[in-house]
Image (cartoon, helix red, strand yellow):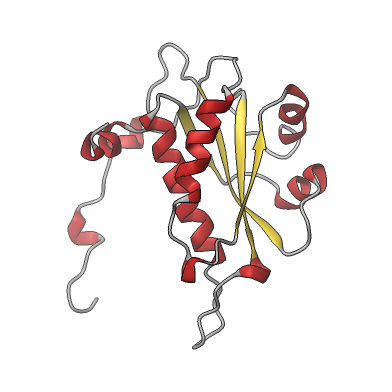
Length: 172
């Protein structure tokens, strides 16, 4: 798909068909995330693929925003493998995970898979439910599947603040 068309047409899908994604679709989405840039290429992302009914039941105990999706990917970051900014000790791993998630979300749309980035989840419940090790922090839950008939963006999807309010040249 042409990039400009991709970024204009993609929206957060919240209504899915009940079928799990096939492995070839999962592989393409994971490959897009694998190729995403990370700080010093440390690749601190850790991705948990949830594509079976028993996993759906578990993740449903951690968020109310599952939207009936048949598949999800929990994007995490390993804080112990993060590049660290020397001036203030800030970690790049959370930003790296967000970049990975963005690449995955765009590839999902590119191949006809609907996706919604969910941050409304209980991280400690996710860690307990899926055995996430110490130092690995959940960042984003990408719920996904094939869009159901009539799936459409929410009304605010196309409402943008004027660029003059968000972009500055030289100084604020």
